[in-house]
Length: 176
Image 1: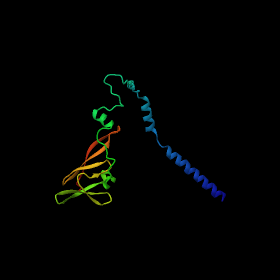
Image 2 (image 1 turned 180 degrees about the vertical axis):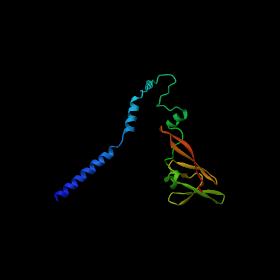
Image 3 (image 1 turned 120 degrees about the vertical axis):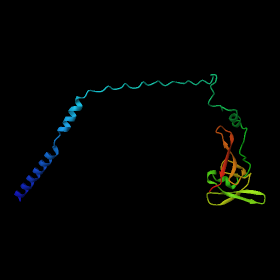
Image 4 (image 1 turned 30 degrees about the horizontal axis):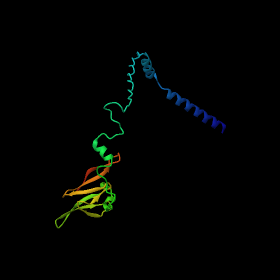
């Protein structure tokens, strides 16, 4: 058995040595390339771009022509911020369609009953509701001002961000 182990161990050593010799290979082309790169002349590095210093702005509200950022810049904004202008009617009872965001409501048609034209609005739960001018829809106090065959026109009252409100036109077009 000892002789068998020694032969096997010797064979393993011969195979390892052959593998190492095979891996060394011929590196003449690599050595030649490295020598060529080392002999090249070094290039000139461009200087870094000049950094312009940051200009400091000192705000002084006393300067002529400089508006304070805390005062509305238009007379209309100043008027709405002071309590004048449109306001939501907090005394009226909210209508059913005011519980839905306007972008979830779809116009699906119109309906004539006698001389009156009604708009047909479908909510996200699939129910269809009749509306006429004067009804309210959406979550921004949207009042219907007109109904045509192709759309329902509205006026919404939204916050202007400085304590007042402004009116914004909106519409729901007929869905296909």
